Length: 435
Image 1 (cartoon, rainbow, N blue to C red):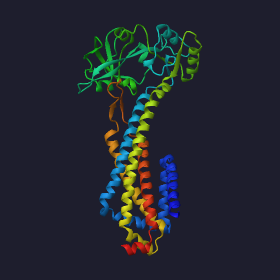
Image 2 (tube, one colour):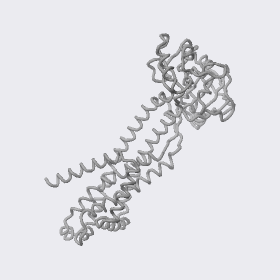
Image 3 (tube, helix red, strand yellow):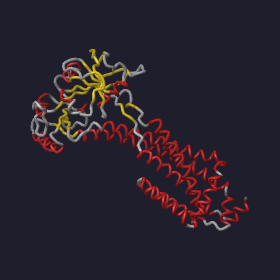
Image 4 (cartoon, rainbow, N blue to C red):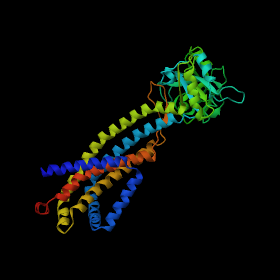
């Protein structure tokens, strides 16, 4: 019964410690490290723990195989977790970067994306004249009715095809996206079957270099320029909206209207004007909020998948660490018993075993994070073939690396806790007699 209560207490301690550790920022961890170092330097128990840890680390070369099991296992957990989270971060950053608080997007009421929305010409006219819409030097509303269609194109270095996003825009579209820059060539001419392609789209699809002609649907289009943007536009092909609508038999309709607001604070007036007009059944959002909602669902799925895979792998790495450290404690039973016999208390022994495990876990975490950073940071990827292609970059930033290291140290903490307690509770006379 006593042993059960002790083990139950250890489980509760581990759960509480992990709950606190998950929420701990890096500055909190740094404070803990400083306090721990002061304890080891200024107290008798701390100095004893340092001595025992030094001896334990000195024997790692004799336990190289089992030590590598811990390091490599935890490196795998951190690597997979950080890579999946970096994919979600990159995708979310790509979608969110196209959003601003001084521009608004209007869709048909009840639509959650452009592909679900349809606006007729009368809708577009009313939206462009709404209160809060900025005007250019000639007094024309800064608004762009836009139409998005899927166009199948061959992938580079592949026999497969994927759906590229072809966006038909009005003349004001360029002014509404100030971050968009022409890298090569020029803008398309309205009324002509000309394309300006995103830099990421050109990298993904074949035949999108300036001067090339490609077939979209039943018609031939000419690529006249390449642009660069931080947002999802970088994965698109752009042309004149009326030309796209004619080629794809969309009449004079649009899916969305993008407008420039006189100021971010004008959005409330703009939205209220649209809501009060009985001719309209539309919903307006700032582009910042719209893209945040678009990325939220997918990023959440990726994060859940990453955490689920990480937990499964962490359980495996945890059992590997437990087995290795229990074996290490058993092999060092006489050494630990001797230390206890000459006056070392249980606390230094517990601390030394846990510290040894956590140092191995830290080494595995650093290794896993380093590998992912070298391979995946800035790596270009796209959504799966068969869907509209969206190109994005993996982003392995300091926050994700810290998350990976926290996971590594958490595994090391739990993996070392029970073997450490066993080492501290090992009867001195029994250990000396059996070994």
